[in-house]
Image 1 (tube, rainbow, N blue to C red):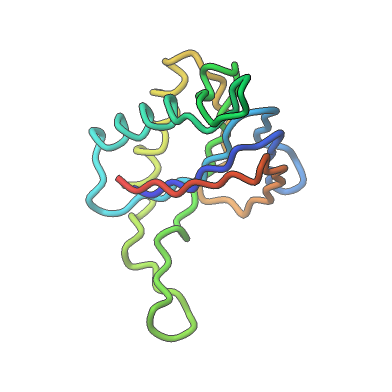
Image 2 (cartoon, helix red, strand yellow; image 1 turned 135 degrees about the vertical axis):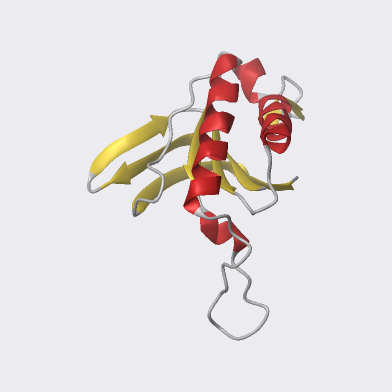
Length: 145
């Protein structure tokens, strides 16, 4: 499982011109699944995202989590995180999980985060999405479990 996490002032995802999900201050998380991913990894990722301390405290140190600041998390599925372009110029996506594997895992991640009390809007799995992000910092973290 791979996540590309961006600290944002705001972010939104649209499908066919309609906003599917949006947040103000929080995290925009692009998430990709591979064949070996499990619910155990989903739970670890949910805990990591919930506790990830990348927001500034009163001393301007990245010491606060999205929960600490009352932020939200926008989750966007993105199989291209498993694109491998080491050979040639066209990425291979052979490591990306098939939709029937990835979608339930992403749904479980969203449920887990919502159970922690966060607002967790999402994109639309498998759709052609347009994402608007105002990255705050910029702060971008890559997480692999």
